[in-house]
Amino acid sequence: MTTIRSRIACFIDGFNPYHALHSLKRPELKWLDLRKLLANFIDPSRHELTDIYYFLAYAERLPGPCSRHKEYVRALEGVRCHADHGTFQG
Image (tube, rainbow, N blue to C red; front, side, top):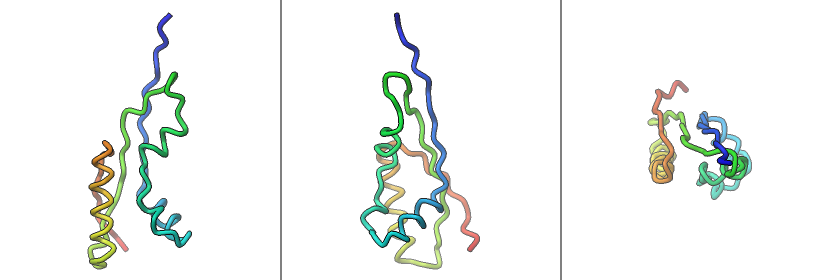
């Protein structure tokens, strides 16, 4: 009997995890591999993680952090996360 795996897409508001990790004062955690993290919560025999959507906005007024954020987003795209860019309102 063939088991049909359900397909899972995850939607992440990038603002919330960034500030949660920032408050821990452990900068290395900001380079979190979202695909690997989410894979820990999914039973691969029953589910398939198909898409990860990461919603973000760059704080252009802060050149250093903005540059690092852009680098992180490029890394996420390298592990097949879709980046959805918004406009920073703060």
